[in-house]
Length: 190
Image (cartoon, rainbow, N blue to C red; front, side, top):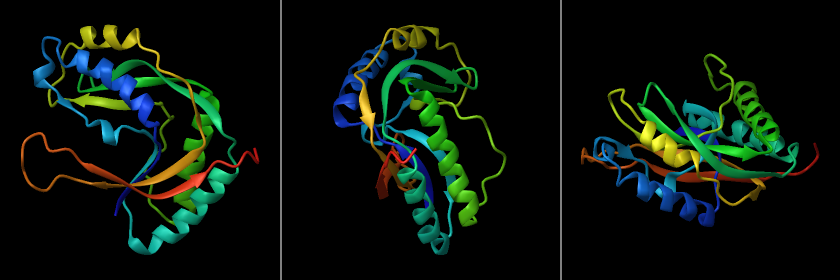
């Protein structure tokens, strides 16, 4: 299974961001981008890639412990940025980013301890991808619009293990489908 650990924003937060993304899609150059689907919007904590089915129970048990050891925390979608000189456009976060980073570190450690090969460790950068494109390009107009956005604050109280089902039809613009295969309440044990 192709898996990742994530924080899933509530529906009302997705709706708020969706209104901003709808405005971005009307800007010049937007038709050259592949816009991500609202149902799949998430803050990835740790990307695991293809995980052997035999490792999933141990990974799940370790993620449950990581969730239990992390207290709930406030988060909001705020601003935005880019990766790869405009190849990826994302919305950022504000709130208790220290606890979000801690949860990301725990999600990565859970995978390593469960035997999931993780590759090189990178410093965590909270982001929710809203669009991608193949070529680099100028995304300043999109960033200016995202910069003014601050969504409502919600309490992150859950860690999710998400399965990514990649498109198989070959239809242009088909989106990956995401399915939460595990959810664990954050426990506040600190």
